[in-house]
Amino acid sequence: LGLVISCGGSKDITLPNKNVKVEGNVLTFKGKPFSGNIKMNLADKMDGYSGAISFKEGHLDGLTDLKNDKQNQQMKFTVAEGKFDGELIMKDPSQRIDITLDIKNGAIVKYLGDIQGVYKYDLNFVDNLANGTMEVQGQKLEFKDGIAKGPQGQEVKLSLDPASGDMEMEASVNGRVAGKQTIPNVLTPQYLESFLFQAIATTNR
Image 1 (cartoon, rainbow, N blue to C red):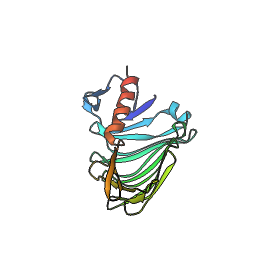
Image 2: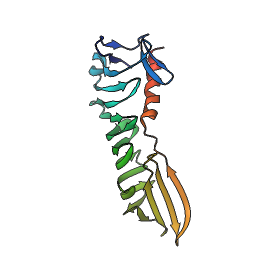
Image 3: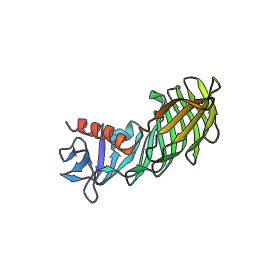
Image 4: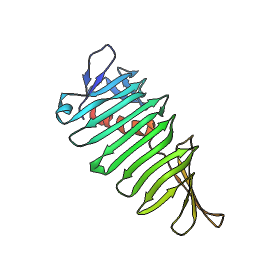
């Protein structure tokens, strides 16, 4: 993984570099939490990569936008005060992942996604209630004001927990709750950091 780090007024440095480390889940440069951008170097650009990863005080912060036009890949998001805010794009045809979210202060407002053809979402959340469609393994539900009719006639409620970003699903039959399920929100800045830090640590070995 060839990367370039822009360190304020200092020169750009490429990885591996002994001055770049992950210490206590914080990205550091010369022992201090890193603020700046990780950019693609010339070799990466020749492979089709472009963009930068933004850090502040050793954590993801600001706009990150990475692309590979040759492979039609993109990872784009903005982090503000430790939460996603605005548009989030995760696109990787090789993994059959195509997700676009609209997030406000960490809570999903719009979810448009296709995950390996198994999970398909075209949802808007109004007052944390789902509107639109969700398809799971070929079974499609259409929601209005958080309510949809299930394949066996049950009523399915889909809402969003604004604090965690988890989606809560509840099925009822004749007014009685038949089952509940939580669809956890794994797309958090901390989750992405764990993968990025692992890649950086591996590169620096």
